Structure formats: C-alpha cells, structure tokens
Length: 225
Figure 1 (cartoon, helix red, strand yellow):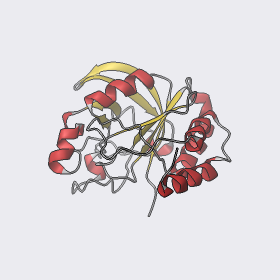
Figure 2 (figure 1 turned 135 degrees about the vertical axis):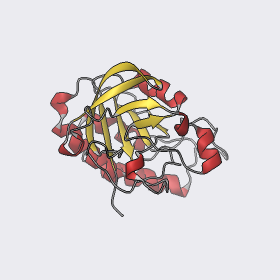
Figure 3 (figure 1 turned 60 degrees about the vertical axis):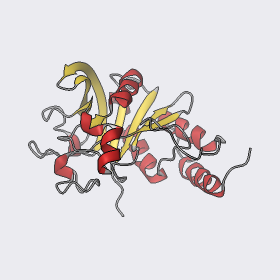
C-alpha cells in the first residue's frame, strides 16, 4: 500500500514524539502512529465522526500523558481516554477518543465556551476557571456520572487540576447541543459556543457516552503559537 508524502512525514513525527511514553494512554497513540493507514478518500462523509488518518499534535499528547501519569490514582478505567485540542478551530474535529487496547482513534467536533471566545471567531482565546466566566477550562478531568440534562442524556466531569477545580460547581459537563451539529458548521463556518461545557453533536455524544463512561480520563488544553 502506498502512502502519501504527508502521511509518511506525519506518521514519522508522531512516532518519534510518542516513543518515549510508557503509560497506557501512550500505547494507543503509538500503535496508531505506527499503523499504515489507507489513503484519505477524495471527500470525507458529512458524519461528525472521522476515523481516517487522525493525527494528534505530539506536543498535546505529551501534555496529556504527563497529566495522565500525575492523576493516575483518580482514573478507574484506562480503556479509552479523551483529548480536546482547543488549539484548533471549532470547525475542526478536535475532540479525540483513544482506545488503549486497539489503538483506534476517532475525532469529533466540540464547542468551546462563549467566555473563551467573546467575539465568536471560532477559536478559543483564553481559559478560565472562574464561576460565571462561561469559559472553557484547561487541564485534566475524570468523567463521573450520567444524568438527564437540559439537552438530554449527559455526563458530569470533575476537574483534577487547579486550572479546572471549579468544574463541578460550574456544572461543566459533556452534552449534546444544536449549536454543535454539522449543519451549524455548514451554515456559519464555525460551531456555536457553550457556557464552558464540552458540547458535541448528538451523534458524537452517543459514541462518547458509550465509550467514555464514568471513571475515564479527559484532557483539554491549547498549544501556544
């Protein structure tokens, strides 16, 4: 099977960056980077879930790995972990699910908080942990319980770092929302904004809740330019 020059370069860079990792989180990403993936089709489907050639920035993976190791005692299930890379625009699938057993990686659209992007540019400008900020918070989370929320079935998270310690009191959760649907992206060129929650499309939420239940690791951050 022939790989494009871009795929060879990206896979090589990811492998080099991840080779030093030894945690269960890394095993999945390293396996993915070393697997020969089929060429990208000419047009991806409109489905918000994309599983073709997903590449996570190695620097983001390194940060997530360090946070995972730091909070390992708080994580009950290491089978699937999640990374939200808010360096990317809301138009990009930037919420990654990593299966540590199979190495499978999928990615999803996810909205950020309106307080993180006051001008609604589609890019997260800042994080905040303050109540009332309506901003996204960076750091490590552990998923907790399912519950019936305003938008339907949702999942609570608990912040594990100083930067997101108010997640529970701020009611930061993982839920679906109309403004995170692909149709909004098609019409506006960017997703709508949450009040700091990880807002996904309905289809993406179904997969996330099925695979990332209570006791799993979730990491959110942004790389500086």
